[in-house]
Length: 72
Image 1 (cartoon, rainbow, N blue to C red):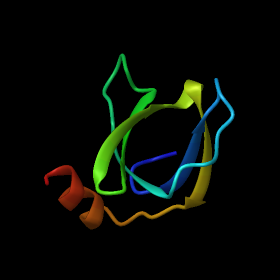
Image 2: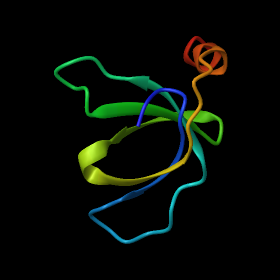
Image 3: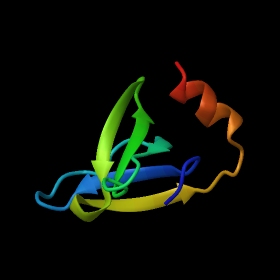
């Protein structure tokens, strides 16, 4: 997973439906690099790779949209 990817996620500690699509907009710096900020349904959320099952929907190398959301 990387900034710019479109993903869906689901907590791995409880069975639930997959999230609506979310855009990965930022990765936390070390020592918290397993934390990611995603933009979904008009808000930012933090997810963690080891506690969520993540499904990659598409990978986008264009950073302009991500940068505009990160600075909003």
